[in-house]
Amino acid sequence: MKGTLALTTQLACLCLGATSQAAPETAPPLPLHLPTEAPAPVRAVQDRIYRAALKQAHHLLGTVHPWKESEMGHVFLPSPRRRAE
Image 1: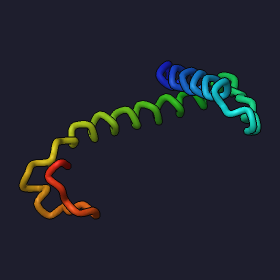
Image 2: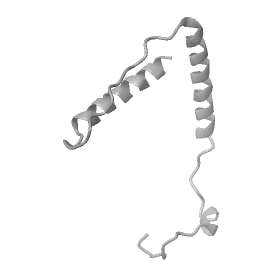
Image 3: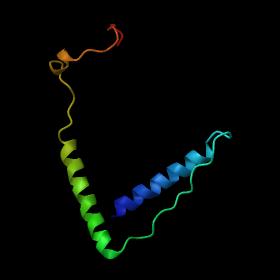
Image 4: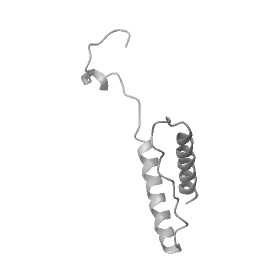
């Protein structure tokens, strides 16, 4: 649950930083309203979902690998190939 709070805090900082760098002719962004802490039964479900997503992310990270040259033989770029690419 602490990871979710940290992510929310980082997102809020990112939004606030983007607000200060927006062009002057654009409309201001909508205000950021963070919800208060959820009730205990809801927090238990949130924590369970967070842990399941974290386990899934760790599992999928193990499936990532660089392409071998033989796997790239059937992949073509939509533009003409050049040796500099």
